[in-house]
Amino acid sequence: MKIVIILSAIREERKSQSLAIFLLNKMNERVSTELIDLQEINLPAFGTKLESHQNIEQIRHILIKSDGIIFISPEYHQTYTSTLKNMVEYYWAEFSKKPIGVVTTSAGKLGGVQASIHLQSLVLALGAYPVPTRLLIPEIQNAFNEKNEPVNSDIEKNTEYFIDEFLDFAAVLYQDKRNKRVIS
Image 1 (cartoon, rainbow, N blue to C red):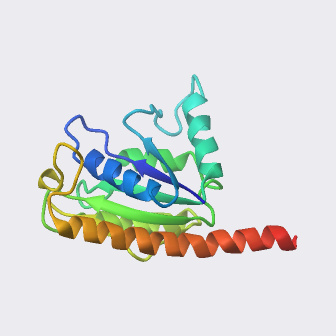
Image 2 (tube, rainbow, N blue to C red; image 1 turned 90 degrees about the horizontal axis):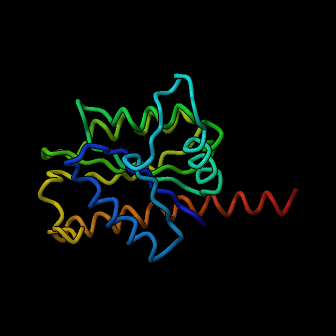
């Protein structure tokens, strides 16, 4: 099984990157996982004239090969990032019928709960399956040290629980797809 994490925070002072690295490392202990960092991949605004399709096709290729996806977004104005919205506009079939986990962060105490609700609606609109368990990280600016390690055991415990639930959900869909290939 291959999982892709999409980090949608692109601000220079972003804090969600520590969470993405921590989650990537934890996931890679159990399953092949790749990180797409939208700060590092320039995607033009959807609908504008494209000079090159290289980045769009690079992401498309990664998404096609994935068996599950995790969106990571800080909460901005009670929703997810515009960079994530822009990215998903380029794709549909690449998300179809795949499990998608939602991870959100906030500077406040609610961990991006509003953004997580919007993201789960987005997942449904993409024709994908939202994993019921979400990972919400409040006060992200204080949640990780300079080594991208959580500063309290609750973050680690909640992350492990999210990973367990995500992988259980993804494994069922993965096995179902494998069974359909064998039957066909």
